[in-house]
Image: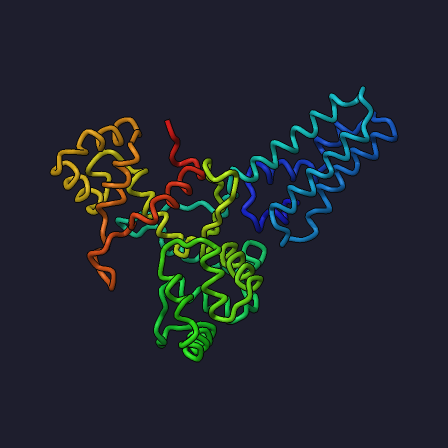
Length: 345
């Protein structure tokens, strides 16, 4: 299980817990002096923890589903008089599974300096080794349909052929050029920072991509970190879940940095200082900025009008245009709330 969850960035404490189970230290004490029937149940728990480690490609949700099924079987099989000891073991397993979602597994630890450059060479070396690790990144080296690459190509804004492109990138660009007349709907949708999955399906269908193909492509790119597939259930939508695809995850990070930030002027970059000056110059939201910096509180109007309303692109084809158009604010709010970065008071 530890090996399988390694590809899903399991938590350090979960890894330690599973190592303990693998070595048999904690479970052996719990399994001692059990009657035969219960012994089988507890042995099954231990065996499941060990045998789940036979593959490193199992998704996290599959692990949790299998463990939940096993826990339910254990509850049904163990006599009532032994329920207390079983609950103790199951609570440890449940806590470990919860922590596997909350905590990431550190791959390495090193010190770097953005002023002197200390440690950067070591950091590059470690990253180079990490990306070649198939257990950490099982997608590396996987053969992909060119349609997947086409979607990624459009999400990245498109790249012209050049000497620094890989063979795969050249093949994708050629594939796009050969279908230029039929890819405009998908290209147009992918130019947006965030779209609903339904809109993406419709655009892909006009490019002769089947629904199953676009679903597989989006989920693969989500796993690879190229896009973010986010499902949100609005409070006022009768429980209907809305799936959105953030085609450039860095765009979310850019939005967050205007909200979650340092308070002191000397601790932020020039872009934030410039925004602060503009807010205070206007006068209307000066107090709202102080509330954010001093107490971590902000109104939705301040967020929409200033924090996400002022920043603009400083260069490139989008120079002068707003980074966060009004139509994207609801999607950003949903993500920040679901990720626990914003909370309604």
